[in-house]
Length: 448
Image (tube, rainbow, N blue to C red; front, side, top):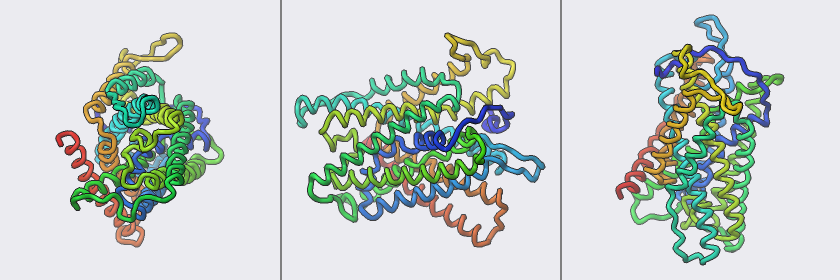
């Protein structure tokens, strides 16, 4: 399959019925995912100053680039004298930056969407296991050996998505996004509330300016790098931004609605992130667990902890589909363009459910592969950090900035051009630092 083929597909007509609330649901479902669960640990590694500041800086970077992306939905191609509607992130890169950039971007997009499936599988299985452990600790005491394997629950999550993957397209996930967004708010509130209650119960705010101390300086460096990677992972939504914008009705214009939705979504999620990260660190200090809900900093009230982990599971079911549907669409559009007469891509119906052999085989294989890799590398914090460090810079920073420079015809060596270049280079150094630390963490966990 040619990497650039999905970017050249003919336009498909859909009834655009989305509004600011459905856009918010899609964005929040995409943003508030498994990354929020590691933020207390990240703040603990960075300390009381660098931790919150890092969260705010990543939020500002994400909002800046989201604001740029809204301008690329409708693009005037002056070279060919046509107006282009970019229905996806890949289409925007192809139409504005050309084929070479589109090929590189396609590889990164495929990798990003795939690794999100792996991370979501690990996190959801951890949440199911945590429910069983919570009940066990409540019944037998906090010192009981409540150990459960995680592989079975990864398989369970995979089976669910073998079935859910047959949802026809991104537009059909609107109801799933709404449910998932509600779940994300629920467990974010619970995690923040439990952390705040624990801190009040302690009678003091734990933690320090320097974060968790280590025996060796190099170990602190690796942990800080992993923490930055975890934070980078928590802001992934630009990949579905233009897909979401394509579902919006007008008036008002899709750009106006999407700008407002992104502003509200980034502000809301950043407040949640600061609360989850800050309250968790305040409650547990140097003992802050890697996953605030499954690391058992909290044992009681166990029913509330069970409910929070159930919300995580339901949210990640929706989040997995939101991102996977984008990947499914890329592959299936490509096959439809290349082999329009093939019987393998033609629909058939089972009990009024529209299916086709390509969708059944490809999507099932994809779920099996993400589940298998999650079982091979079930290391939550390290995998999250690696995922965030690899794709945050190119997809959230580099390509949006480059598209803006081309789209607005920013003159080289002007103040604006220099600012954008310095901004891009600084973000690159931060991403490289996080990448090295996350790779070290995975190697240490796997072979250490």
